[in-house]
Length: 293
Image (tube, rainbow, N blue to C red):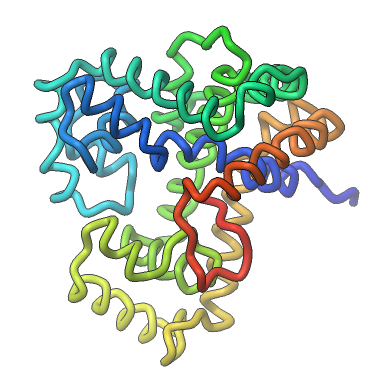
């Protein structure tokens, strides 16, 4: 039987392109544009910006979609954000922030380069091949108009591919019986997370008691050892989840084709490296390889 390389290509495309997408969360331009639109600084902009494409969504729905944030944290900001700035205004602010951030971090020469235009075209082919069924965040963002400028079209395509992958990842977690905090704990235990365990816990607003209780449960289940590392069983579980995520993310890259997907990776990797070197994204010193987000 011939091995299917497309799921692995899907994972590599995610690793190459996702840092470009992530600027919309961590670049200072994001907070500036969201507060200019009327939102409170900090978490409110993140949550509202991430889900504005869905319209005036409730905090409970957002907690379900984002999966591993403490629902009480989201409820502090949604639906209150929609009384400060309409979802359409938030979406506009997000795109403006991305435009500013990409121009600053990549530089105008790169932004206007034929390579970025080529990457945008390839990524769009993949993004438009995504199926919306069971992919609420992807489907909502897919209804937004495509930006005209190539660097923004590339960012939009990478956003669509990321949300498509993320929706599939949540389905994999649910299918494997891994809940919100367990997903975070086991991801951190791989040593490959974007954040340290403490950063993850604090950013998602889980208490030490919540976190420690989950660590105890996972240890009792034989998925973590006494030092908090994944056991063989834990490693197999995370591998099954990642394999399922890659398989679910594969269809758009299958439509693009392996050769063009490899070209997209080659075009995105220099952009990823510039973003990584800029210091805009958080870095976990304990990770053993570059973060995937």
